[in-house]
Amino acid sequence: MTPFTLLALFSLIGAVALFVALLVYLDLITTQLEQIGGEDKGYGVKASFLSKIRMGVRAIESETGMIAPQVTRLNGTLTKVRDGLVVVDGNLGGVIAAVSKQVAP
Image: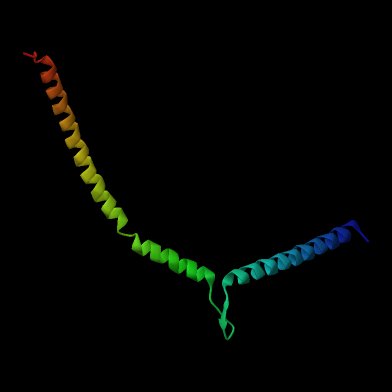
């Protein structure tokens, strides 16, 4: 047997071993995914847990979709309140300064 034939044989054995390992692991992955698939509803039909999760996430997305515009409006209102409080703070500072300058009779 020549070295070239020996290397070709080892390469063939390695490739077969790689594909066998790939098939075994794909079968294991498929088994795990089928377990996640859900419970039997009858007649071989499965209720998919993944589809239930997807529907739940979709419901949350549709129910909370209006939060972003409302938060934007709230931020604008709170900015106006902050600006008003800055003015009130300045006015109170002036009142305190004026009161402290007054002499008690």
